Length: 557
Ligand code: GLC
Image 1 (spheres, protein in one colour):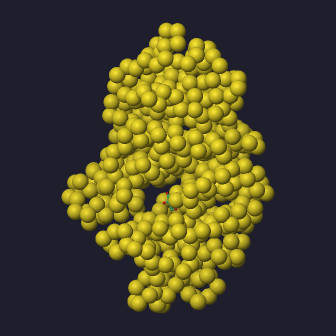
Image 2 (cartoon, rainbow, N blue to C red; image 1 turned 30 degrees about the vertical axis):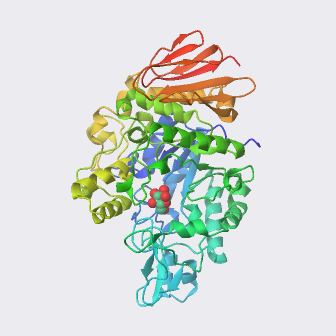
Image 3 (cartoon, rainbow, N blue to C red; image 1 turned 180 degrees about the horizontal axis):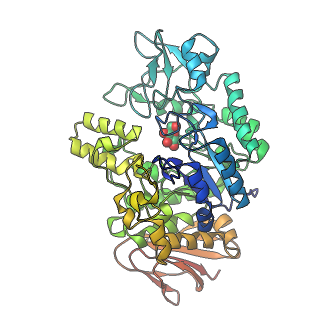
């Protein structure tokens, strides 16, 4: 495996709108990020991923870009951005941008021009198609509900949008459009960003015949992912993108890829892959729900563990995956992957341990290091997220009562992780002195950075130790390149694995159950590296793990 600069780094996702507001408008901003760079550095973060900060109408919170070359005024100015970049560099930190190029906003100049002249040059930047028998060109359901086809006013045509109707899909068959996108990517790389998190990228390849498929819901539509799964050839587009842009700059890229075809992992993240890495969503997809969030069942500990282990085993054969427990689209990991009895400080530290020390690049999401949890919203009106509103509708249409529909979306709403960052126990969690754009989780009085700073047993202090261990001179090599090998799989409720090099053998073990368990180690303990309850209960090669205990041990080889 060819060694790359980013292999041993720790990344952190910032959702700028909810990070820190410095001008009192209730919306986080770039100056807020600058102000917290030392906090992030102190935590052990190397790479910062900024969710979109481009100009946008914010129909989908910035994932609908109306100007790829401008900073959203809500977030600040290009000068602020340049300052952030410079300040990050000063601290040996890397900044990566979100790259949203499957679609843009309907307010982008290209789309406005396309609408103004539906037979002109700019219409071919998008997918404009005539309807069929007075209906849409195909029967696809968009990711956010309803048809993927929206009528073009004053014509017999429709345009394609896989996400919201305000997010028209870009036509990657058009060389001129591609050039515009590549130039833009290079412009940001020239500026000094270290790379990109690449949004929804698998969707860029379309079957331009747009065939119908059998409906998969009572709405008579079929998920647009069906077409994505059927069509071949996305790899050629991804290679072109890489060659024309990232490769020239040695950029780091992490892709959001769902619906990849089997056996393509090497092409995606191998030594010469399309991307540096891609997120491991193997745990997240377990609870997607066949017919929407309201149909999602509970996942068992065993299912969760085996999904992650299988993904680790597969990943290490070809490259590095990016490990997450949450992000801006997913509920909080602490509210999702922990059993009820473990939803407390030690449980959250345990989840951090078994996630951060996996093989791959850890991507923390803002507030994860504080143990932030899902937030209960009192009504559907309180939510902002477009996807939550759609899923609520889907649940009602399936016959759920309003109360049950609200409960169903509460589990998975993307707003769970988008609530403002909890800095202190001051008003609005110290996020803003204005009115926050989204509800603050009422648990901020307990879960907040200022309080945790003073408490040596807090989640925050523990995350610092965890990242420091991962990056320490003595163990960095093993945590980065060491083999991942499952351990104690036959033990109920135990999540354990080894990280192994010829010189070192490290055991990471945690007890997700309620009763103490004894493990017999294959060799003696050389050194105790970390534990979340202050003491490791070891006698010779036997260790006892109480409920929610997590330990990291170096064993004799
Ligand atoms: C990705 C983003 C999500 C967004 C969607 C459309 O999945 O993570 O937030 O809504 O793409 O851009």
